[in-house]
Length: 514
Ligand code: AHR
Image (tube, rainbow, N blue to C red; front, side):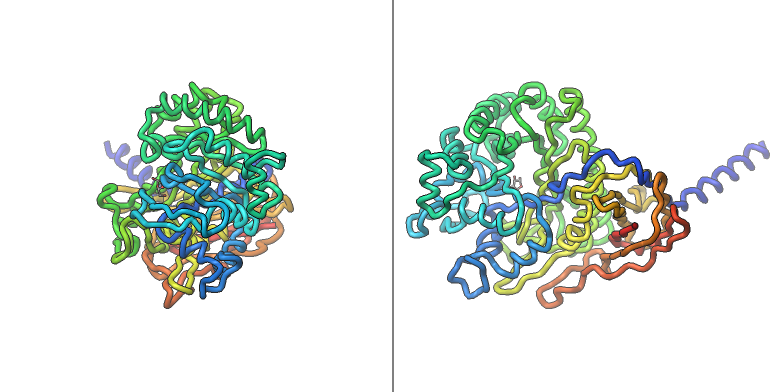
């Protein structure tokens, strides 16, 4: 009996010692899959102050602008290297009739945005304005077509207007509107959330409708663009199953929407800034659920499409909190804290690791709505902590994912726990290795050993870190640079294959090894 107790104690001791060892093994020569740059995509909906007053202020605005686009915002977005931008919605897309948004401004009818606060819009931002914006940003346009309240005819006219260079009516209408050459539209979404705001459909009904729309989209657009079918609401695996079973040959991508709600549910989402450790923890835990979700949906897709021809596109994701006090509830304007930064970094790590199936993701949304890159107020603009994460992470765009294995301690709160570290690694076309690391524990610095196998590295080229005084710290219009990346010095090269990193509490680190 004495012997057994001794053995148990030794095991427990060894286990607790082991639990403190944090090791990341990276196979530096084993990369197979490319991290599609479109995983770093964005989403812009006609919602609140995203388009009007966010991206678009109009040519006559006192706010400095380039042909109506906010100049400061344009420059900040250009620096972000956005690969793809989804528009015009969201729920708005299934109410949008594109012909209202073309031609001379005086002739464009006003419309009521029935989904988002009943706001009346003057339609000054339409197809030309969106596609020209994509050209200015150097990103691919992702158009969400109206299936809920539109027609196949309306969609194919739109496709012809945007993509045809023939002598045909819609291309000629575009020419009349001042644009000679077609735009390079790369993605067409066939409806949005057709299980909900996009028409309350069953997957069986939607898959038939999707085939009809998709058929004509291909007829008019050829293979110029990829057709994205509406996918599941979070965990609805049956939706994915039915879509793959019945319509896999009619789409090039299937979407997935998943929002992080830190609080108890849609009616108790919790504040963006006024939260304690419990809501911080649950926000992170729910964001990490993305891994399980993508794994499950991918497994279903694998059953029907083992060659992975159909992409999984997580074309809406991010944290959704209560709106900022005193703002319009229908406009979804929320602040953005260090918690958002860690949700962004850990989600991007997850999506990187699923890059064999996930080829696109679009965080919601680009400016002034949900987990934004940018917030504006009059002529002021701030870059959010989430913006900084996207900028730090853009080194992964189109790089090759390096297989890795992380053994790390847990961040424990009460009876619950999550892994304390999130990470991913890639090698770019110049042979530079980038490792992204986040310490999700807000209370403790963590030491991590990083081992490279296959290839070694000669030096740590650079490192940067994003952290803050508290997990609910934010950038404000008064103090816009509270949370910005700075140089990171706490990484030590031990040998050509080994590295030791001390990751401060609640921080995101990017290292470049060469
Ligand atoms: O991003 C806000 C809304 O969330 C989108 O319009 C809709 O698709 C989703 O429910």
